[in-house]
Image 1 (cartoon, rainbow, N blue to C red):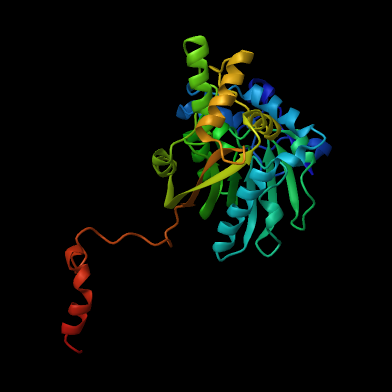
Image 2: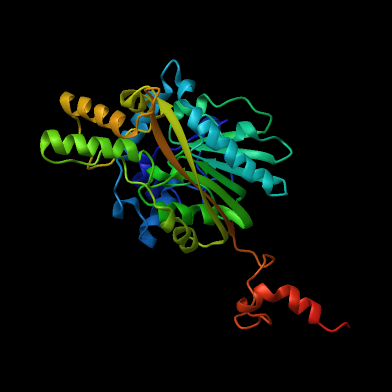
Length: 354
């Protein structure tokens, strides 16, 4: 089942539809879980979290990049990173010992997470992506699935809807990450969990340094060619500000080897992960690219002639508040000092028998 949202009609929908209603969907279907895209946008404007206040990425360009990558004949050839990260997120989902009646995957692509799950874990699943071609190419699965074409920055769902929300390698392209995390928290049911992964700040540092050095040497200055990414030191604070509790943030570094720098760039294009920042430089001179490739190989190359590309992956888990969740003890309620932890064995021996 496909559900389509045309974000270009937001202003007209604002006048036509009341907040919290249902859109008339393809095939005259009505889905009570969905709210109008206009209400999401107006909520964002009222809270000051509109992407207009943080306009780092050209979202229109990112949609075109993803559409181009999905149209490749060998598109699945470039899914190796997403498949690997998707499997690691699935492992974290399995660690939560419960079945989720209703789940949502944001920025699903060709369903790189859900292909590792089963009906014993999720009863019903909603897949959301901004790329229609990728949605149509999602793998067949046993879990009952509904596909929604919508922007990750404007999630068209009612509050307290989902038991589980997952996202893999998608949120690093949203303009308003704090606002997106808050939306995810809103659509989760109390005691629902968000499990996600996004690209971290040290990703592709080899390519970044090589391009900067080559451009500085050949052209007398450099421009940013790798998109800015979130630092791990900021992610926990962002999750906390969005209202998540019992946070877990950890890091993986995945190193992939390529024949040369040009293959790194080709694979990034095939993944739909090319730079789409507004301040990107439209082109690089040929001699600058050749110099960057030489620098890349000289600084980071292996003995077999290959070059590495490092992907720093930030994994996050956050729970929506519920009164049943474990709470920290009150300040000053401890009866053992941290200084006595090393003496625990001695203290236990001296403890009088009851």
